[in-house]
Amino acid sequence: MTTVTPLLGLTPFANMRHPVRRGLTLIELMVGLAMMAVVLALSAPQFTQWGRSTRVVTQGADIQSALAYARSESLRRGVRVTLCSSTDPRAATPTCSAAAAWASGWLIFVDNVQVAGNVAGTLDGSDAVLRIGDTLSGSSVTTGGNLGSWIAHTPQGLLRTASGAAAGSLLVCQAPYARRVTVTAAGHAVTAAETCT
Image 1 (cartoon, one colour):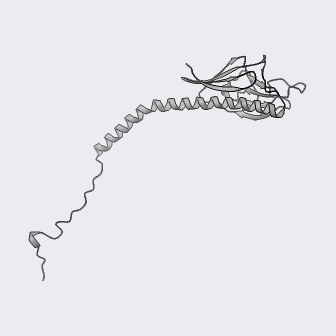
Image 2: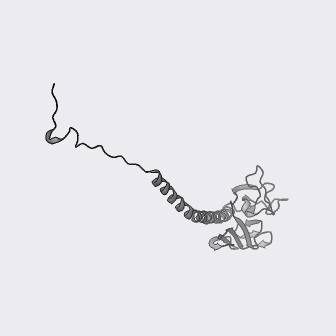
Image 3: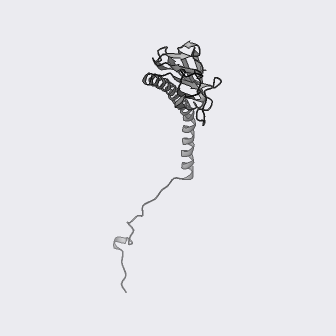
């Protein structure tokens, strides 16, 4: 029987070491999770404020776009095109509402006031809906100047309301952020940042 004799007093495989595998201990894991929770807690208010600011900018741009679209359609079609507030713009038979807040949504429609019995600023008779605007989630909208629950563009692009020639603004507000959409008597709309309380 043959035996292996160690050389220089070493046993076989003595110099071969197994790699050490080391993971996280429970304490290290808990410290890491606690640090992540602190960072998230500190950043959450800023993220909420950023979300509000972005929402108000988008909603202001939506109103400005709706006004520009109504004006361009009135010029293109050679007819009166009206933008009105509506309590439920996505209803099967949507209607304009003097009591509705602009934040509830709006309708853009061809307002055939030249047809007998057709009431200005009201979706009735042969009026055709061109576009709808959805609810402005979380925001309020107030009007200024002599703007009311409906704004019409004449075939010349001029702005009209129930009180005649018009100019004014719509303020989209979600404190502390706001966007003011100002519209001139010639129907041009611009937006600017503001603050609201």
